[in-house]
Length: 334
Image (tube, rainbow, N blue to C red; front, side, top):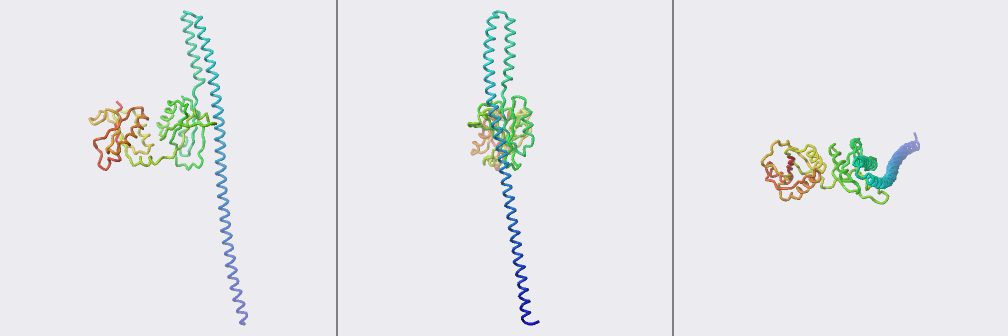
């Protein structure tokens, strides 16, 4: 083979290797481009899906708002009409009584009829409270079943799915409108607590223009815990009871746990120990913890409607290292 042929062969070999390298780089570049293109499409699709979901939820919410506003207006009109009719009827009944004079049998029958009519009217305008439930995946059907199980008052439940719910959080807050009777809030709260739903907050619900129906509504939702909840997790509350009411004892435990406290419930005493407080008391064991004891006592007083006070304890059964992190409740149910 001549020198020229050798050089030509070497050149062709190098050219082939160079071409393979270029082709390989092009292919790798195309793969990277295709990957980025597909990723971008996926991101755009996910963004579009989120926007559609948000739009869907917004449309759903808007429909609920309109429906509830219309229902509220109808309720107001219905109650106004019934009250006017009742005033007219009552005036007519009073006139009949005057005509009846001293006929006790007629007056008794009129009074009986008046009572029955009033009862019918009460049923006709029975309070209907809209319960807007911001449903979370981790709640399951528990809350729906609880609300629907309450026969009186009449809670009208409607839902709104929570956007971007990751399934790790459950509801923890009740909001109520200014026209909702406190007893109706308490009924719902107690029912939820009794069934193991940890409601941490009860807050008033502000209604704005276009949402007037909210003043006659309750909302169940999730509110992000504050740093105080994390602080409370470092505290242990020991619950000692003498002849307690079982439902009250359970509420105390559930509510304190919902606030982040670690709660230890000890066996009830059938006989009152000499060291047991005569009054409902939260004991603390370090002077710097008096304010925290007051917070706990306030929670318990509001929850049970029993007056809980505070007192610095003697330290019986509390070690030196526990004095800043342990509180003891004396619940005297006798």
